[in-house]
Image 1 (cartoon, rainbow, N blue to C red):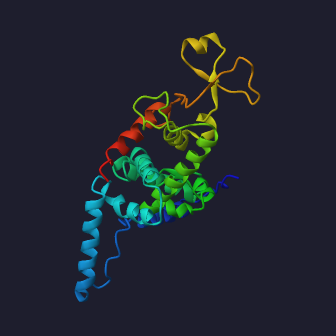
Image 2 (cartoon, rainbow, N blue to C red; image 1 turned 60 degrees about the horizontal axis):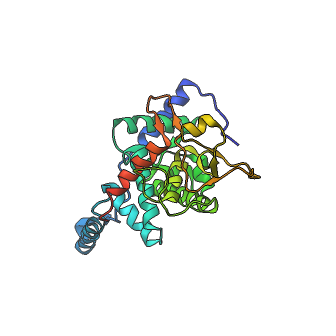
Image 3 (cartoon, rainbow, N blue to C red; image 1 turned 45 degrees about the vertical axis):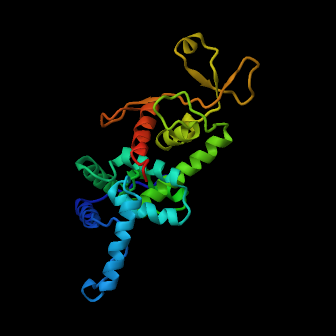
Length: 264
């Protein structure tokens, strides 16, 4: 069930804007820094050493996500799925940076307060999706919460794709991760699993065959239907803001972000 849309007065909207602006603070969840560092030399040293270790171990990861990444690794989160989740955050919000992200994210947060189910935070995930994954909407605004949310959705998509027959072999897409299950999990994050996941079959439509397009298999396969394993459709989406995407292009962008993390 979607959120109920609330109509606000001008003064109520002004109060919400102030609340959102005040919540925009540079809290990137770094190691626990001593409350009174002047009296705790040992704590300062420990803090600096922890930072140094993280910087060395995860030198190829985006700066502000190194510590959240390390915390989730300690909880036995799969490193590959974490990197895929980070790659998605890189694609969705440039790792929570840039003027466009800062402006649009604030506007989306305001929209969320008044009842719209907007895509929020570094992972650009809807609050309802976060809740389905066992998190709170407020978690999406923290670095570790966004990374955790993206990870959980990738894991969910990955397991579903395996159930539908996707393998670890390369898909029909060039420039992806080289793993069909990962590729389809990535694009399902953006376009939805029901839309992009198969099973897909060879088409019997001459026009589709000419274009190399496949079709969703019927629940009861027809005699002339041939299942195409590890197929990823290339849907194209025109967005209201002019940032048009295709499913293949989205996977390539995420995969490029992930490749930059190969040394960590």
